[in-house]
Length: 479
Image 1 (cartoon, helix red, strand yellow):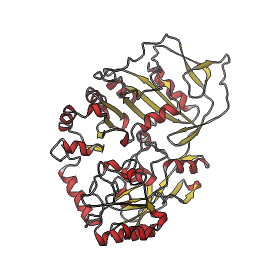
Image 2 (cartoon, rainbow, N blue to C red):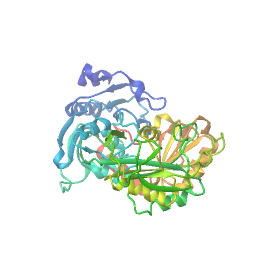
Image 3 (spheres, rainbow, N blue to C red):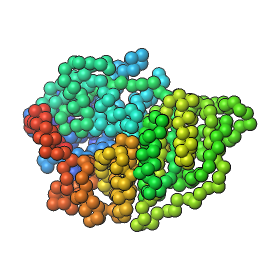
Image 4 (cartoon, helix red, strand yellow):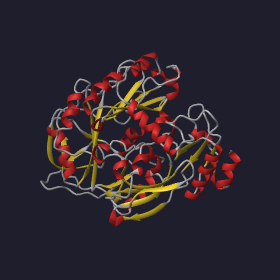
């Protein structure tokens, strides 16, 4: 098998770092990195003929969600399919290879003051093909939707080596079945995506992220109130993290009184300098990068000046006490609109303090699966997020982060949290979920099976029917 695969891609396409693509205790027998769709077709045709199981990945940031084959398997990495195929800035349409990273795409778009409103973990490593294949978009899903909402077309190769195209490079299209949206979220189990066409948008003039600590008792009402306010945030998120994960955020303090005056705020700092004039102050514009997106700062109109003395700092949690929840919101838009939205938070009494780009990236990248022995993604109603986070973080060694506005909860356990109590909690879980890392541990402690299928009976039948129609020989993984 290995020699046949290597003969197709040549020396330049042989991936030597198999350790980066480890799934639990399983390593691929070979890693190949094709440079063109023609090589992908040849590889899949060869694997189909020999019934050689295959797993598709970009840089492997979310590879742990998949289950390797029991037989020797090989891995197809799309990381050399990393060129910009076509870009029409005036039409806001971009076509790229599946292996290009999100950061590389944002760098290209930035030259034309455009961007992709996605902020998943590890933007310098996450490939566009991997993001589309897993349909992950980060906290900005609350305002901008998922990758499926921006996917116009794609090219892909079926497990038997047949290439096809679905969709068109226009926003409105009736060109056949939406197979491109079927593959979005299929995790590479139905076909190999080689080329993707996306709808991009103009970059905002200003971006701001603010956050504050609250209590578990107040969290459900806080989230409900935030979603009723006349504002349009990019995302509403909550984190309750253990083990010093709040480094750089613990200094944010609560304030009980806020007065608004004209002033200017030092770039991404918590210090406010109050001006003596009643007109907005100007300052040099600087470029700040958020989630791979470069945003040009605009002069700030009105900013809060804190008058009250600081409230007590959040106390460091013990091994058994749950960490305090930290709420943060992200805003983008016109220079006059973003400060106005932050002002609405202060008017409601929320002690929102600015978060700088480094802190925001730290929160975003906490969701990288391989950094946690166990990471689960749980789908809830938005009004269930607060209570669910409180229940999970009661467990020792368990942290949680939620994109609360979208109802997506992430639960992570460190080594001390891999306990029978956690297994019991999973057994009683009634919501749909995915295990992004640690599925082997869960299976080992549950008679070889996960405690609950993430799909109901009808969804399972449909999934199996699609799998049999597109991959009858089971070359690609089932989950």
